[in-house]
Length: 163
Image (cartoon, rainbow, N blue to C red; front, side, top):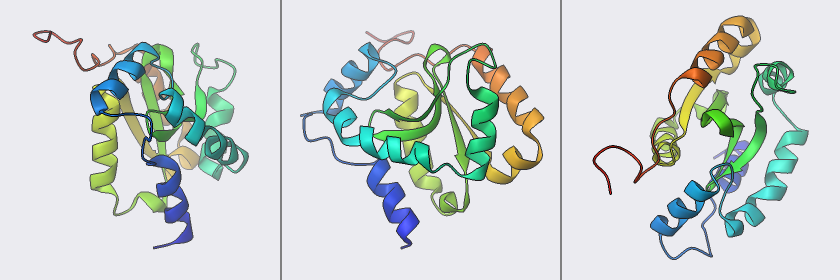
């Protein structure tokens, strides 16, 4: 296991010492849909700050095109959301944008589980490879723009037929 993977895993999947159940976490995140429950926030705030100081080249390129409401919506970068730190998050559109480098090769199951958890809070996840961002930023931005205007997923317990 590489040091980068260990660091990634440690900063994106810590246990939640303050929560007795996932239901409570989902209720908390649904109410405060733009961040993690308080105990998680405290655990992830500093690692997220450190990750913002050391972006990949692709993350830096994309951030320069998303910051300051360049697409008409505010994006946050390296942002705690539930027990994860997502690359980019637009709370208003309930959209998460992930930029995947080599570290994501072989993490298909982990990424799918993570997307499922974020989806249960109503977030849609779009993914791009580093190479895509660096070589075709126009198409990446067009896809992000399209995803921001699509209807957000209903959070668990908010969809039709639930409740």
